[in-house]
Image (cartoon, rainbow, N blue to C red):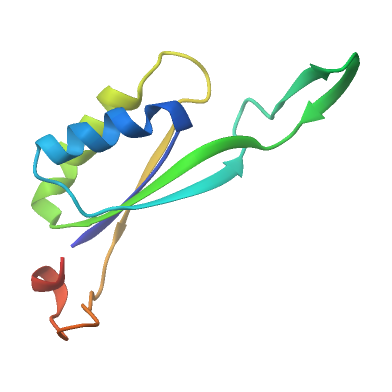
Length: 112
Protein backbone atom coordinates (compact mmCIF):
# COMPACT_ATOMS: atom_id res chain seq x y z
CA UNK A 1 0.00 0.00 0.00
CA UNK A 2 1.20 3.52 -0.77
CA UNK A 3 0.36 7.10 0.17
CA UNK A 4 0.59 9.57 -2.69
CA UNK A 5 0.95 13.19 -1.64
CA UNK A 6 0.69 15.72 -4.48
CA UNK A 7 1.24 19.49 -4.14
CA UNK A 8 -0.44 21.28 -7.06
CA UNK A 9 -1.66 24.71 -8.12
CA UNK A 10 -5.14 25.46 -6.73
CA UNK A 11 -6.80 26.02 -10.12
CA UNK A 12 -5.82 22.48 -11.21
CA UNK A 13 -7.71 20.73 -8.38
CA UNK A 14 -11.02 20.17 -10.21
CA UNK A 15 -9.27 18.81 -13.32
CA UNK A 16 -7.15 16.42 -11.24
CA UNK A 17 -10.12 15.26 -9.14
CA UNK A 18 -12.26 14.60 -12.22
CA UNK A 19 -9.45 12.73 -14.00
CA UNK A 20 -8.84 10.55 -10.94
CA UNK A 21 -12.57 9.83 -10.55
CA UNK A 22 -12.75 8.74 -14.22
CA UNK A 23 -10.01 6.19 -13.44
CA UNK A 24 -11.87 4.87 -10.39
CA UNK A 25 -9.70 6.66 -7.80
CA UNK A 26 -12.23 8.43 -5.60
CA UNK A 27 -10.91 8.52 -2.05
CA UNK A 28 -8.68 11.49 -1.35
CA UNK A 29 -7.97 14.17 1.21
CA UNK A 30 -7.50 17.77 0.04
CA UNK A 31 -5.89 20.50 2.13
CA UNK A 32 -5.08 24.16 1.42
CA UNK A 33 -1.36 24.65 2.05
CA UNK A 34 1.27 27.34 1.52
CA UNK A 35 4.91 26.92 0.64
CA UNK A 36 7.68 27.55 -1.82
CA UNK A 37 10.26 25.62 -3.76
CA UNK A 38 12.90 26.90 -6.12
CA UNK A 39 10.76 29.92 -7.00
CA UNK A 40 11.18 31.26 -3.43
CA UNK A 41 8.03 33.37 -3.55
CA UNK A 42 7.56 36.57 -5.51
CA UNK A 43 6.79 40.29 -5.12
CA UNK A 44 3.38 41.84 -5.69
CA UNK A 45 2.02 45.37 -5.88
CA UNK A 46 -0.94 46.28 -3.65
CA UNK A 47 -2.31 49.85 -3.56
CA UNK A 48 0.99 51.21 -4.80
CA UNK A 49 3.10 49.38 -2.24
CA UNK A 50 5.35 46.49 -3.18
CA UNK A 51 5.49 43.53 -0.82
CA UNK A 52 7.04 40.10 -0.84
CA UNK A 53 4.93 36.92 -0.89
CA UNK A 54 7.15 34.20 0.57
CA UNK A 55 4.58 31.40 0.74
CA UNK A 56 2.62 30.54 -2.38
CA UNK A 57 -0.91 29.07 -1.98
CA UNK A 58 -1.08 25.44 -3.12
CA UNK A 59 -3.35 22.41 -2.75
CA UNK A 60 -2.17 19.15 -1.18
CA UNK A 61 -3.93 15.98 -2.31
CA UNK A 62 -3.36 12.77 -0.36
CA UNK A 63 -4.41 9.41 -1.80
CA UNK A 64 -4.02 6.03 -0.11
CA UNK A 65 -3.95 3.32 -2.75
CA UNK A 66 -2.80 -0.20 -3.60
CA UNK A 67 0.81 -0.44 -4.75
CA UNK A 68 -0.23 -1.54 -8.25
CA UNK A 69 -2.15 1.76 -8.77
CA UNK A 70 0.76 4.08 -7.95
CA UNK A 71 2.33 4.42 -11.39
CA UNK A 72 -1.03 5.11 -13.04
CA UNK A 73 -2.06 7.71 -10.42
CA UNK A 74 1.30 9.52 -10.49
CA UNK A 75 1.26 9.66 -14.31
CA UNK A 76 -2.30 10.98 -14.31
CA UNK A 77 -1.62 13.73 -11.75
CA UNK A 78 1.59 14.69 -13.55
CA UNK A 79 -0.18 14.99 -16.91
CA UNK A 80 -3.27 16.85 -15.69
CA UNK A 81 -1.56 19.23 -13.20
CA UNK A 82 1.18 20.26 -15.64
CA UNK A 83 0.84 23.85 -16.83
CA UNK A 84 4.43 24.02 -18.09
CA UNK A 85 5.24 26.90 -15.74
CA UNK A 86 7.36 27.13 -12.62
CA UNK A 87 5.58 26.07 -9.46
CA UNK A 88 3.46 23.25 -10.93
CA UNK A 89 4.22 21.22 -7.81
CA UNK A 90 5.61 17.89 -6.69
CA UNK A 91 4.42 14.36 -6.00
CA UNK A 92 5.71 12.26 -3.10
CA UNK A 93 5.07 8.52 -2.67
CA UNK A 94 5.35 6.86 0.75
CA UNK A 95 4.98 3.29 1.98
CA UNK A 96 1.94 2.71 4.22
CA UNK A 97 2.42 0.19 6.98
CA UNK A 98 -1.19 -0.04 8.12
CA UNK A 99 -4.64 1.38 7.42
CA UNK A 100 -7.60 0.98 9.77
CA UNK A 101 -11.16 1.92 8.91
CA UNK A 102 -12.48 3.25 12.21
CA UNK A 103 -16.16 2.40 11.67
CA UNK A 104 -15.70 -1.28 10.79
CA UNK A 105 -12.21 -2.14 12.00
CA UNK A 106 -11.22 -3.28 8.50
CA UNK A 107 -7.47 -3.36 7.93
CA UNK A 108 -5.09 -2.47 5.15
CA UNK A 109 -6.34 -2.93 1.54
CA UNK A 110 -9.88 -3.70 2.71
CA UNK A 111 -9.85 -0.33 4.49
CA UNK A 112 -8.88 1.61 1.37
